[in-house]
Length: 206
Image 1 (cartoon, rainbow, N blue to C red):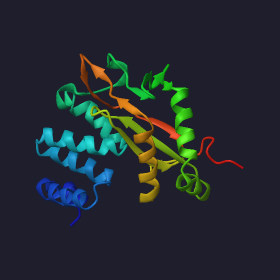
Image 2: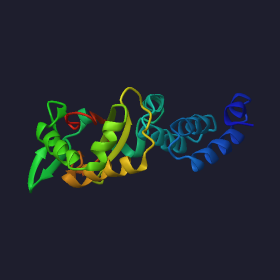
Image 3: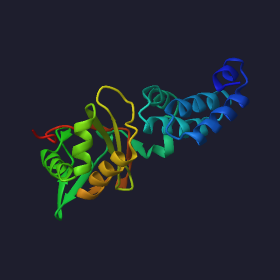
């Protein structure tokens, strides 16, 4: 029996067991994280449900995000916030100088310049961008002052299944500058917000 069938038959304990096994086998399956959360809501396990919705949100599941807004109003005691609500926006440090990551809600042009230069210096990235359909990089800065990066197809939320490319791009983003998380009331916070950049912008040269 699959999880959906068990859920539709109101066998929520079995559905939870099936979805739990599924996410252990494939932690990148955002639909299973979401379905696990919905099932746990049915069982009255709201705290677990919110944590598992959050896992789906990190994989860019829009319905999970909407469910969290509805069912998890004080998730992790308010340590995950929207950019518009924080007192200090995320920053980056380049050659010892602090810069705002965002200027008027857009990525700082200096950050883009640094990124282009670093991406162009990677033969792996340039070659793979030339070989593939256009891609985008989705990223966010977490409360640990780290950047989280995901490479997806240009016109979808589908992750590019290329571990070498994923690693190389994440390495560039992580090491080209130092990051500082958004803050509220003096404490670092995670953000719901994410930013998207096309991977082929000015990288592929004729």
